Image (cartoon, rainbow, N blue to C red; front, side, top):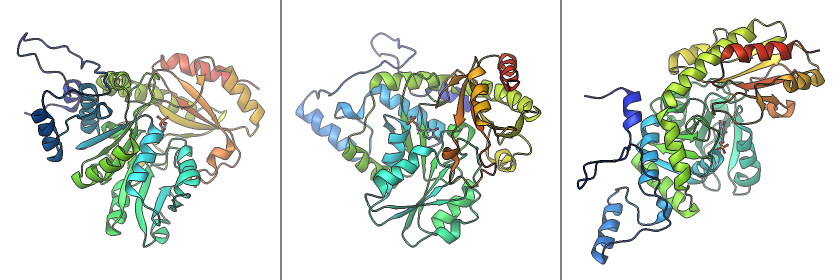
Length: 393
Ligand SMILES: *Cc1c(COP(=O)(O)O)cnc(C)c1O
């Protein structure tokens, strides 16, 4: 019998009981090691035989042992993949995926809603390596006209992380595959739990586990997941060449986050929807950006593709006065001013007008935009805090 996802997530990678003592720890031990010992030259040869046959078996510390393997198994389960590569941050995972899949002379189409550091990756590294990047609209209206014979990858961040533009991922996969290209999805917003990117046709899913997977704002981590063995092999060669690895303590923290992922997401979502509905009716607010709200341009796709929402939403202010927007942000007491999201706590980011340059979905000029991460504080307290701040002149 196949158990429900929540059940499988709690049991993924759990240690087997010892044949000698009959007991096992509940949690996977944190196995810190820089190298491994082989029992004999015969064992050494056997490890490499099994590795060559595709088995995940460590021959050196960089590959990680039990802790890493358990986290990889859990992330494969979450994303619906077969092979997971851990990276020291979400950005490292994105750069690794790009370098693994692209070569000089290739062209990649990237959604214009993309997370800012990816534009930096484009301008600082990909261009230097002779990899061309063009940006397409999240509604994909211009996608076919932007395809080139050398387009090898379409990269979508679905949804975006400032305006939460939904993407029609199955349609993007169709365009990519008809062209002989791959579809890569930054699936940080939902993880495979809220948004099954691989099942919808993405070839590779990239997740900043720093956010909801780890869930407590105490670890940086990225993951690249695929279900295609040939792609796994290709990525593995680049992964090895780049020498990427993560520490066992970080892997252990991320694994602890995995165990409560579904309950945290459900609670974040409930709080965020309460706050979003309140803000949508607030006179100081111009518009709320959250695909889970009816009226958001991405709502139909959200209903079709997502299991739920998370703690994220943005809203624009009715005022165009930036100094007042700063006073409002400064007046919030329960929201930390900061980047990132996915921890237990509420955060606010006053999005700089320049951050939205090139985002085709942004139609509000220089109106101030605030991105909120709604944490696990009681939503009534968050709403009272927002009300008080929004009343400031
Ligand atoms: C935060 C984030 C990343 C990068 O993750 P880090 O671990 O901070 O490097 C990538 N993509 C999205 C959508 C993010 O929000």
